[in-house]
Length: 260
Image (cartoon, rainbow, N blue to C red; front, side, top):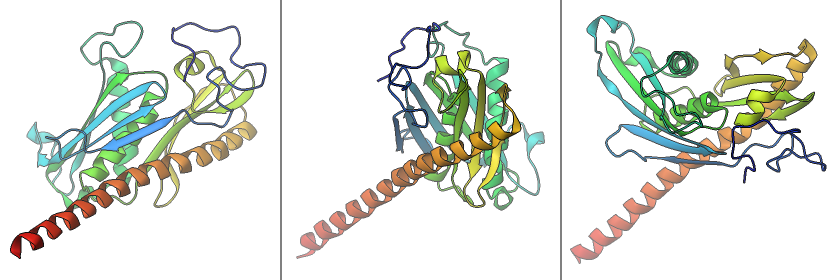
């Protein structure tokens, strides 16, 4: 469990045994739990607990575009609405979406769009509503990951899933999956997302100080972490359909008994 519960900078970010303050190794992800089908009235939905982050994503569509002038005659459009609950951060935020939320909404949409077959749905839209209930660093990466999972749960045709994670540098050490306090006080932060059908980078942002050699090391570090995240996404989707298959078989057995 994370040890830091206040938005304060500690004197050091590493324990005497070399581990981070929350007990993780440098290349270790925070605990991740994912679920799908969590919003009943949505076409698809997902939920992720990623460290202290708690985030929902709900997908609606394809449906009519409003306002109509945003519709495209040759393809569908993807609209993402990233919001943080007023109580999700230490300093209570304003209810209205701020500049940062609008920016992240645009980033997530641009990141996910390449994996979707939007040309199959001209004149319509898919809308993804993301609600951050609890925030503790890396919410754009966790939100991108859970949004892709919700789209898959909705049955939207996709070339592949998409996974995202942030890597960074703290006191000269390269680390994976920065927590909120590490993100704010670290030397560098590199959010990255990958599309698995071609293993290309779909999101790459950078804040801080690093050279080109360090950048290559960070990309290798991120890819290993992203593979682990991708496997969690796949396992969650598979478990849903295995459950549906088992329920169908059980229903068929009961129907056969009723016919006798």
